[in-house]
Image 1 (cartoon, rainbow, N blue to C red):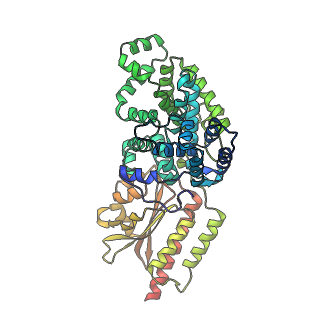
Image 2: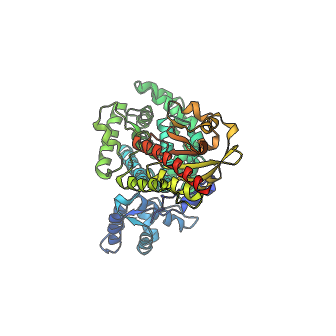
Length: 511
């Protein structure tokens, strides 16, 4: 089975820790693909080419076979350059053993974030093959396999840490934050450096590693090429500029760049077809192919439609859908949509927890028992990350009593009240503060950095709760950092009222 993501895994913060964590993830294969490939492996009439073609329908299986084949390759031998070669190196028996070792799930049971990233890789393969395979016919296998596996270092991350990648997309792509700063905060390392390390460990096709190396250490050349590409309305000037820089001309026309171009186009299209990001990749492709921009765009859109015919699936987004929309329409990132309201079942659980909080005399054995029930009530009303903190006897600091949806390290958080004017105001009297894009800059700067690090995003709630006329608890909650469901906000308020009554009843029982 794939990793259980219901309980957040500790997030690695070093390159070595990330590599070890991601290398240990077994990627799930759709049950239908698993069954077809296993049947083909036991059919003596099937050629290696037939089997390889069937494997191609499952990118996770492609990666697993390539990794296994290259892992057992003699160090002096070249890594397998095609799936057919990889299967031949393993042999049919070992390929079947590997297949049976991989987790299998029905397609709709495989986590959506993982399926979404696989779809981007399949779209990238369609773009790279459609644009370049005819021009570089002898290299079509390198183009196909390299473009499919280019993003594969991130596949296990999409399976085990989907919220981290989702937050990266929202903050970097949609909100324009610095990728370097965001990646340092979320992952502790550069994603490009991590991808290079994984590609080298797995002996992925050389063109994959070259693409990442280009983005890391050859950005100056990339910027030069993009500046020339902007002169797409003057092909003669473009040619003159390229002729004046033979090194740049050779650098741009490396066949390995087809893998990067295909993935750049597919990733940019996830946001919008008419975004500046997408236009840059289209212009660069136009310069590489020495074709007019409108011809390249037409081909790119046709490739997207072909990809959608073969790869689109319910519950995940394919950019070809947007080609049917008005040209300036935008797909709204799910992190910018209000969170869905809690289900009827969740609300039923929430009512049960609130009823328990309101029982008199108090049924709770101790404060930890009470706050555990309080946390569970908040989570069942739709909150995804919750922290309950209580003041110490001297009323100088706040310590964590309960957390939900946060890394276990969050339980060690301590806040000193005198260091934050916002905390002082919240503890002066029962108050609710709702963070939004309109006030997040104003208030977050006045909150301790440890809290801002735990509740990343622009939408969250802070509420101070009192017992016997004195504020004794702070509740922090959000729904993943995106816009809040109004039903959940209302339920949050009612839950806090129930917690206040429970604390008062509990303290009265002790007295």
